[in-house]
Length: 183
Image 1 (cartoon, one colour):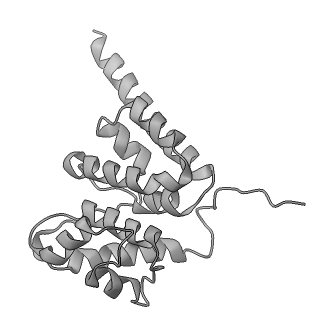
Image 2: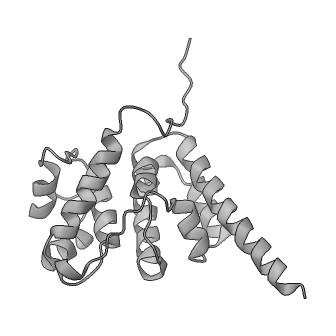
């Protein structure tokens, strides 16, 4: 009998991917601005930047040295605040699902539908474009584990979570606007 795929429970004991994401974001926040800029420009199909290999081989946040691992670091670098290390505000917020952040930032339903229709192998580049969009618009951070799931897991549940959190926020905003319009 084939095993059915399912979304992981929030209370699962093995939180290593979440721990890895948090540690990786923390390490990016401590990198000098030049290293972060090089990671933003890194070609995920190339050999990788020195800073990538330093991050990937650190036992606190080990990453595969493949194109997907490089793409994930590039996306996180795109979200990393610019400027001096001491002036940076953390951007990885567990309580800010990617779908919610996209809805609040004005990401269109059409763009969401286009993203969700992409073949799995094309998500990395599209998530890079989404990260660029979010960098200029997000106010309170984003759950980077949602990005990790969409990039690393070829299954339907990360897309369903994205859609659910997007439309929850989208509908709440529409309801609030409608309620505010009535006298």
